[in-house]
Image (cartoon, rainbow, N blue to C red; front, side, top):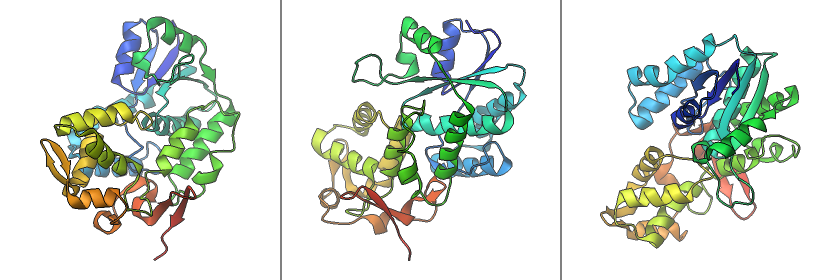
Length: 314
């Protein structure tokens, strides 16, 4: 299937699955998580990769060698793949994937002009309420997805690139409105991903964002017996984000002062008060090094009543 094709996939699981199903062509695995940490518009530039390495080193203790072996070498492979005229993107519905997807399209717009680009995107199958990842699809389903892949027009490529530019800007305020006004977009899951992104700015009520509040709510209501069980429940419930266990582990660690214990998982009195909006925890979390795209996380507050972001001007 698919002779002279370059497949760019969202992860090793998808790449391995497609190879197992004997999909022909070359494969590049996009190993990034651009939904976290500082991003710049110039995907693939020296500045871009320096920002990404700095983020992985400080937030996830990733060594330079591991970053080079895991991400940079694969990116260099992508740079060398120029002979195929058709490029098929394999991405999923969640925030993690959608942000990676628009970054890849931005890169393709710049470096692969005139190539035929198409998209396979998994999510809903038929009338299912569950959202499916690519490796969760059975052989028939994945063949149907491939057969019905969406060819991206130049306008589609420009639109994805535009959203990426806004995502990387120092203010998310324009992103708040613009993503709603392209109903004909083939990127059917991009709007919900952007909505999930905007909810990651701290709320005006208690200084925690949607993800952080969900962590505390799950800890309080589900009463997990261990941190591992807490993360497992968050993974099951957080499909809109597409986060992995490492990301949740990192976020729980940032909130550790609000936890009394992790065996079993119990909140402190203050943790419960923060969750009840009796205490605002913004001051304890605020820093100048946390970025969501190109914007400083703590320079904006989410107002839940109006569903709007407010910029902090002081």
